[in-house]
Length: 186
Image 1: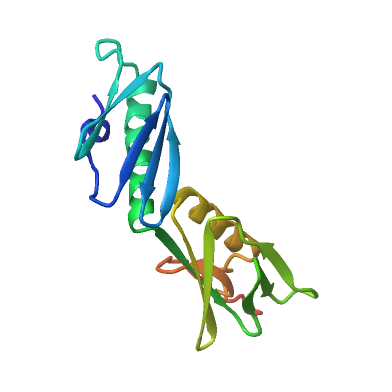
Image 2: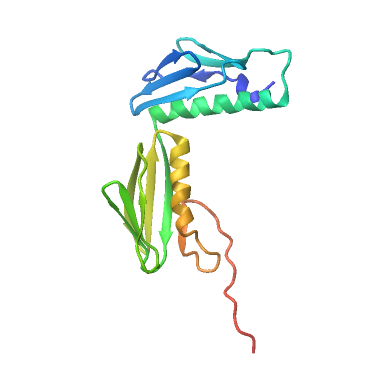
């Protein structure tokens, strides 16, 4: 039995859930998301206040079904959390002369290259930029946790923080072990 999969998901008051065959539409104050699941393996029971996910054959549970059970429950919980409160990731851009700005639906970065780097902002994602002393905070917000995480990873991929000077992108709260700068021997 899956420990996570067995737990019921509590439906907040502001969330409306509509079932269409093997797809569930989740509407909340921030927007709406679709959730599809394998109907031949799992069944979902929706009551007034909670959602429960069960495999169709409880007697014949294999490892794949157990793992998928917990994963489906976590994904559905993330969709419900997304339409009620949303998700955000904060990136820190550190380095002399490094900068970022939003123009329309794209972000333009100055990362020490000979040209500015532009990255289009996907639909359903909002980006906020704050300037601080010696660094730039880039806040990626949205209702879909997967999209927010993927876009933040795409931004970080442009110039990850190096281990010598910590110049580049890093997540807020991320620890990067630094290496000492190599010195010439005498």
